[in-house]
Image (cartoon, rainbow, N blue to C red; front, side, top):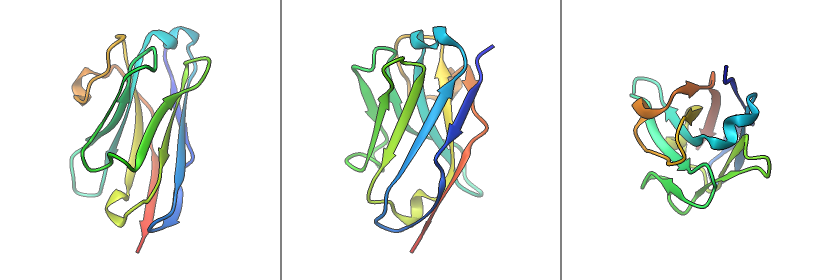
Length: 124
């Protein structure tokens, strides 16, 4: 059973940075594509970034391009999201997700496992 555990959320001022991490308890998760999604109060969960199982290909939502960076650890069962130049509109609960496929996707319905989420709050 895959279990995803996020960490690294918190409160930061606008313009600041945070780094989110997601650990996968299953070693074979290196064969999974990984993604980050977020959900702000009163809004639907939305795509943020994704990375293929190999780590060679990434994708980003337009709203975070150039500011956020997704990467995989050497063991490939961890994934991180470096968030720079944070804006108040980035405030949300951020979720890590795993997809049983080598290819990533921006569609949350294609992900098989989800973490509990970590809160990111950006103050103006």
